[in-house]
Image 1: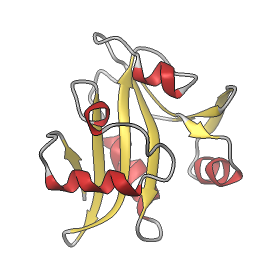
Image 2 (image 1 turned 90 degrees about the vertical axis):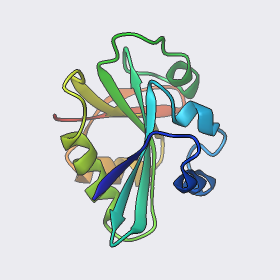
Image 3 (image 1 turned 45 degrees about the vertical axis):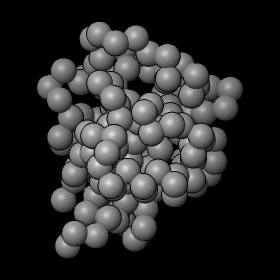
Length: 142
């Protein structure tokens, strides 16, 4: 089951210590009016975590991601995802897609340029839509 952390004082926020992609992003930047942490849980156990920011456009870098203005935010950007059990990241990615607000018209990633990231996203049906200096943007069909 996909669960959303919406409060900074939620004890489950401790999962960010395990973020292998963007451990430098502060908790306050992960949970606010334009960002959430989603957890895939099975039998009350956290199996994977995904951090998602809602943006006005597809970001090309972490800096762009963090400086998106508040307002109409039609792009969901999964900027980091990690798993504690096999297959959980895939389950959370598809559950997240199915639970996005109606205002979201596009779901993309801000992925590191690694073969692991490419294989994960392409094997789950995403298409590479932009290559940036340090990141890739993959898009998932909604």
